[in-house]
Amino acid sequence: MEDPARAPPPPFAVHLVTGGSSSPDLSHLIQSLDAARIVAFDAEWKPRRRGASAHGDDATPAPPNPPQLPTVTVLQLACRSEEGGNEVFVVDLLAVPLADLWAPLRELFERPEVLKLGFRFKQDLVYLSATFTAALGDDSGFDRVEPFLDVTNVYYYFKGHDRQKRLPKETKSLATICEELLNVSLSKELQCSDWSCRPLTEGQIRYAASDAYYLLDIFDLFQQKVSTEEKKLPTKELASDEFCSPSVLECSSSGYAICSDGYSTSIIAKYSESILLTESGTKARSSRRKEKQKLPTDAKYKEKFDCSTEWQGPPPWDPSVGGDGYPKFLCDVMIEGLAKHLRCVGIDAATPSCRKPQPRELLNQIYKEGRILLTRDVKLLKYQDLASNQVYKMKSLLKHDQLAEVCAYFDLLCFQFQL
Image (tube, rainbow, N blue to C red; front, side):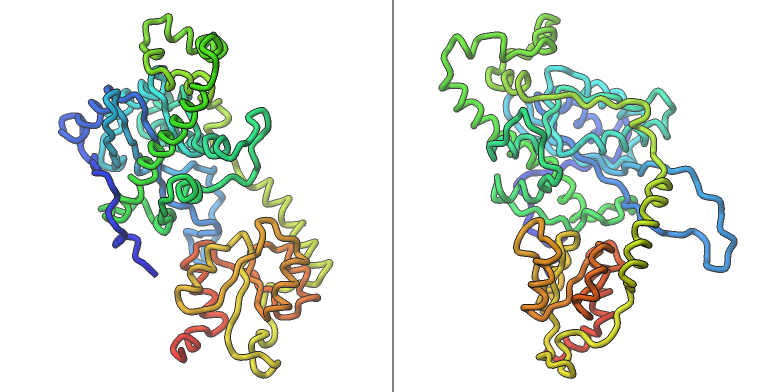
């Protein structure tokens, strides 16, 4: 398996910002934000581990703490000036005084002549606002970003999706979008790394910068396609006010030079939106209600089908049951990333042939190929009576932990040494 830290260097320079208002790196960032016409954003925070406990098994359980939003520790910005130059910044929010960054960020978020790009950035904005509020006070959050363009919408524009219809619930990942549109492979191995540890590794810095930088490349493709299509329109139609929303016309009449970029203006008017946060949307929600609803559901399946998450009997490849001695797995869509990790250590691991397989299709595949179905979907356990010793529920959440769990549970370390 390739170490992400040793991946080829990205085709851009990265400025790491770690100082306060008097530092040259923060001054450089603020100057770039002032000159930017397009800014792409992304953010990182320490992953939250479900089920983690701060006390031992023998300790008296403490009362549950009120839910808290994650603290954003890294902010990435890719800036493009009016002249077309690009600069990429990775801001260490644990080192930079947030008071020195709050005003430039808030002004940028609301500056109407600057197009902001992001990938599902609303959640990032909620966490970022909560981080600044916790550090600086109640009036130090961010409640809006406009004009804003989500690259998810750009992707479905390329795919011919009707803008009048809702986007599919299962949207593509940024890595998938970059691979399909840019032919660029983004490693996501560091996505769940601990972003609160310092110093940041070189691999983390490159990973964080890439997520923001390639949003600009996606926008370039989008702008080229839009400009090509608009050149085909009649001059009267192109110049009509239907391409300019009231908000854009208002900005123009207020003195902003928003209508000087031609096709960029049309993109802002026709395709941009606003991210608006309400007070209720900026607070962490307790998952207690969901847990109460989920537990009876899981219990219902276990009681109705007498399902056990513990493995029983030999696996289908065991020679004692007629197997060939070679482990084979099928990873369902919830954990299909585990299949790549298993293959990297020499283990036969497949994924479903379609994106939304029916349980019967999964069963047919494991029957035919003599595999064990690895899943985190408790509902699939009800098919254990139909697929004896061929359905296993994973307990781990992260891919590396899942790999270790499979190797340990099915004694695959010995199998690797035999290879």
